[in-house]
Length: 188
Image (cartoon, rainbow, N blue to C red; front, top):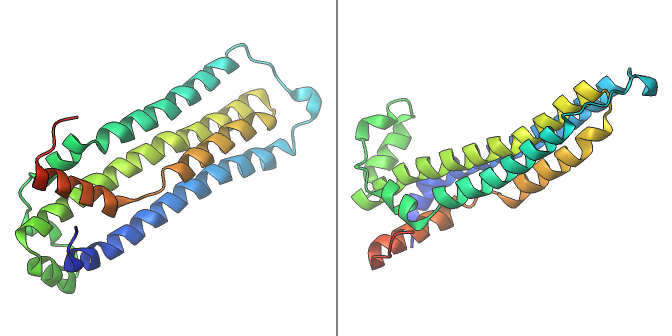
């Protein structure tokens, strides 16, 4: 169980993670809107069939699978607990306000290690979301190449659905990692 001082300390970090998650969703939706606005100037007779369109679908499918595999590996018990073993660096917070430094100094050694682990979790989420957003970018690229905005719909729906499914839940992940350390779980 995470301590209350740690939860309080990480509260702003969790909010930032949610803002980043929402930004990825908005970006994916904007790619569709960009294609639609651009497509208003494309006469239907200007549509182009390209022979390599299936490559875009295959790349999108591979990105979707890669995002889940990456997240599964990044959030495995072994990786999460491995991120806890790094010694915290008290000088790593030099750009943060003094109150935040004081709150960090007030945390116990185990909680400081969890702060470092939170950075790992946050980075892993961002990498996963970037892979999922790339699916929407592929849809935009295909729409531009084919001059057909209907190509973006599937790509954007998949990207937004994947982003929605992988919403951030960092604190339960940290709790899972601490339980593994406390009870000595096996490697994944």
